[in-house]
Length: 182
Image (cartoon, rainbow, N blue to C red):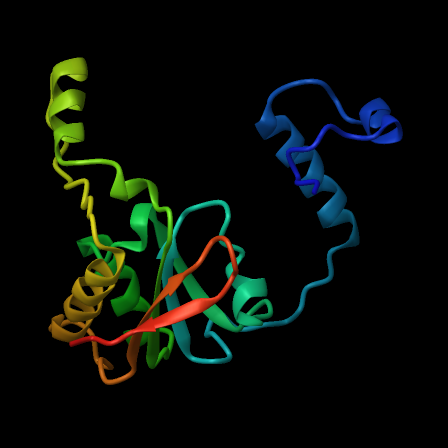
């Protein structure tokens, strides 16, 4: 299996400038922009759905959910945790851009399962300042999905909390398992 991190083939290596990963990304954007055509889309998601998911690089949400460009808003962070900033993004998504449904996706083998809030203490010892944010580590991914669903459903800022569903994505099989909110 190859990934975008794979070593470039010879012709690509000859044209790519040496440098950082960011340089590679900028080069890729130049090739993308050369063939880019404005799709003429509005910022409002066609399916009126916002997906909140973990930032894990193994989750290809568009392919896994059969989504196309313009179908949804995608909000990602470590663990797919519903934080104040996620509520902020969902509020803007709903109130300004018309989304009605929220899909929450956590996954098996998440790095937050191996962390604790001690991580914050270690950072404080290292840099001399305690982070204002919580790690939001967890041991039970299904319970964490339930907690995230509850946070969305009870937010006073969200207009639409009746269609909030949560899932666990299995990184070995690619399948979603829906989590009962109760």
